[in-house]
Image 1 (cartoon, rainbow, N blue to C red):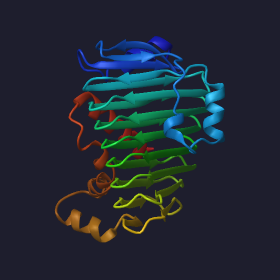
Image 2 (cartoon, rainbow, N blue to C red; image 1 turned 60 degrees about the vertical axis):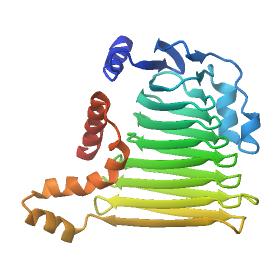
Image 3 (tube, rainbow, N blue to C red; image 1 turned 90 degrees about the vertical axis):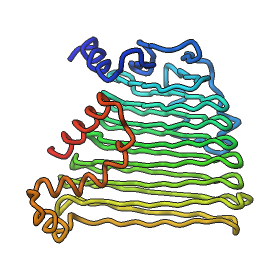
Length: 336
């Protein structure tokens, strides 16, 4: 499929008159945006005020080598789709800034990513802003990705992440609750049917008082695949009345697949709430028998159970084109 064919196929996900951006190899090439939304190229975005001690060798490598550093600035309430196509560029660097009091929904789709790629994205959620960020990753080659979110005073950041990549993956999501009253809900869904190892590291840092986080991770491993969840939450000294909760569920679909769930809580303050839980298992034969006794076939029963792991991602999506795309991709993964 050539360049224009990929563009045309990606555009089938857009509704008429919908705000959208298409990136190709890290550079915006198609946009349909209102005047209060804009994309700036190479504007030297500086996250120093937010990052503190969050930089690492991976981030520095991408910052050094990425040829473009586009920044999307959102100044008004909106629903926006962002589509990424990548064929040739190894290093990709993006930034999204949501202004104060803005309410927005961003659907961010890595629609076709080929070639071994390293991606970094920074998201700054402004004071009193409310953001729903639906991220979908569908890579065809080895992928390393780092998404970092900075939540300012009284902001509300909901990050829903769906990964269905075909090769090895090293994934890092870091959310920093940097100001009082900020909150984050992170819902992660991973399907690994590659026969390879995929590693997902999810971290939330409570750096201020009265911050709240909820992290839920759902994983399915099939075809002798290995899936690793490292779920870390940290409450810093002085972050009084912080509330941090974690939950991980994993479903192993065959004898030789594997899921490892590693919940980590680091707490440096006394007056807080923190808890975690993890449950990893295979398809329950008793549960399947019960469903079959109600008239379902074995295949239908298995899909019903599997759906409890993937439905949390798409249950709030009412866009028919987007929902059809997601369900088709999930079905393709599960049939592989």
